[in-house]
Image (cartoon, rainbow, N blue to C red; front, side, top):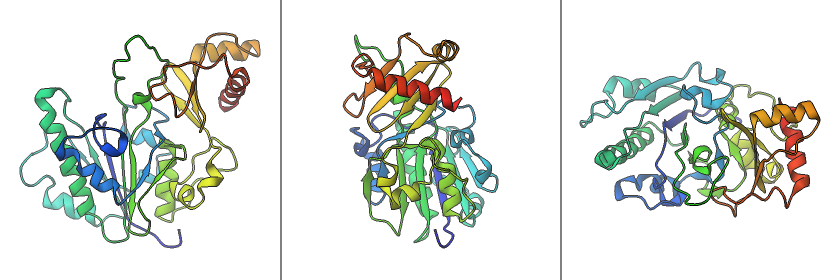
Length: 299
């Protein structure tokens, strides 16, 4: 970007599966605030956590140096629920910052606390919007995925709900639209650096390198072939426009020592296989070998 913008980053521990119709949910009226925000934002429909279930929210971003100077405020489920969701002092501190980060620790999601979930989502979004001026950038996402819904007799090596999360980007200089390009949580660090006119990390030409979301918006076709590496405690995965490939970490180590692997892996055709339950690795053996080779090269 040619001039610095102020950035407002709103993150949640998690967002319920039904949090917004724009993400395929059927939200209660008070959660519809996300749909209203989506109507004036860029919605990245294929956004994935590349390091799911991290202990510290900043670790979601991969390269965290850009967050060192952020004005950060964490709202917890025990925060005051009165008219002043943010104190006036906190509001001034965030409003004056070039990078203001509001992180919301969500209450429990059982039925007895459902009102608290809806209340926190709606009020947090309203507070974040109130911190924005005309040309500021607002980014909204979640730092953790969810426990997979009951899939009945089906099984999966990596639940989609555990790794795919909402991502909205609102700025007064771009029209609202939906973006299908694959994006990942590690893309957020170069996005913040780009928006603040810092020096974003050199992504090089690798198809798995983090990229500023602003670059993707400017040249979506350039990044149509990119891949995301996703790391969980049990497995490594790669998501591209056509597939999600998953392999257990132990299998990958053994594959490296043997120069190949015939052990079971999973390959899910995207976007048709919504919940990652139909393994097509037998039908696409060449794709499996290419993904295995790419994972080994990334270690």
